[in-house]
Image (tube, rainbow, N blue to C red; front, side, top):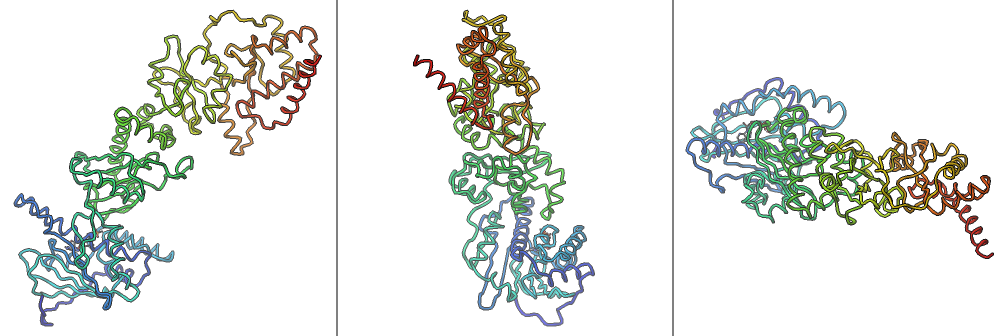
Length: 627
Ligand SMILES: Nc1ncnc2c1ncn2[C@@H]1O[C@H](COP(=O)(O)OP(=O)(O)OP(=O)(O)O)[C@@H](O)[C@H]1O
């Protein structure tokens, strides 16, 4: 570089539109002035990618890893800032075209958006990057910029501007190819001459730029674009480091998926399954709404949490997706509506679900851990992602009466091991395994060895009934009255029948009145005297309980009380009722049995009457035993 005579300096005027734009940038307050650095680094990186590409296509040679680099140097005292690259550089014509005009179609939209934001107070500097006018963001932090550049085979030029209407261009001596941008930081932007600040910004926005970035000789970006490597080149340690960086997690990931797609759309992705779900993620509606992997376009970060890459129920997956098929200056709106994005999303969803499927068969322990953490979220997909519903159903896991605690069965396994005579898939929902296993409704199934799925995840009752059937077998709650119990081949049991049971059931119904829909003889009970079941259209008792908890003053649907004619209590009551149909003991016991059944399913609102009645009965029992 050497001095040039003033006569060499040519002055140019910005186009009207450009003046407006610069005026806004120069004279407005921004929320994130730091993005100027991201924009300059991104431009430098693009310029070097052009060299790499040209070299590759023209001579078939790959560029040496250390040849292309970005160097930043700062001076705290003078607040000087210099960023230099050895990319393609610009000819004089290119300087005029690129830095003198805004030829991009997005500019008008940008101006409009800026004006709207300005009316509302502060401007978000991110807009600048989104509309492809990145270079000018430098005017947020300086009053005058100098660009010295040389393109291979052309003269070097110096471009200077204060962003106030005109710019100048002059020829200079510069032998190296590439671009050097220098300026003095405004006083209120002095922080950008601090080493730590620059390091932070580079880490935040440009850590995975594919070229080394040096700050006063020190290399800043340690991590390379890992996802661009082939799977065999990736070291596990490196992958884990990268995960912690992108996900801000302190643990290693549970597993990761590397995807490289070339076809209708091309992209690479490196996705991670965390070991644990954040506390607030589960059961909190909308918690995943604004999450998503990072979106890169040609190794430049475009969006930190790109929610359009995955359906909501998969947004607990973190990582990076990098595509060549979107423009670098892509705006959020374009991201949302782009057919490229919907294609990427479709492919990613399919690959992720196959990944889970593969884990379930090849690494069951990992899958179990994953399912424990994210199963509830996956289930939400059943009611929102109909295209993948069948795949999602295969991923479901349940505890059952035939699994150990914490072990799971799939619907496929359930169907494979059910007996020929069984036509339905049975389930029972509740708060926990212990409570469910004590349900009288289970007795028949336990005795017959019929497996029952135990739905203990609160989400279950909202999604499982919607499956309706699996492999042509209806899914049925065993709380429902319309279960077809195979005609009893039971060993003869002593039980009350005929008019004896009929009249007892009548007394029960009279006693309980409108609280039950009906009182009927039971075929499912073995060791309990009574149980409550729902009519075929009744709500699951678990759903009912949850609605009550949510303070919905939903009147409980009436249940059917089933009575076990072979239970000693029922047999005793039947005898009592034959002697004296009006014996108050029968009514007290009927009340007690009914409330006991409510208590077992967790739906007894107050236990006051239950306890005082219990004391009454104990007193009677102890009195007679004294005699
Ligand atoms: N360091 C550089 N080396 C070579 N060309 C550059 C450099 N910086 C900028 N340019 C040229 O100037 C143009 C305008 O840059 P600007 O940052 O305003 O927009 P962009 O880079 O096209 O869009 P975006 O910044 O949103 O990616 C670039 O397209 C590029 O051609």
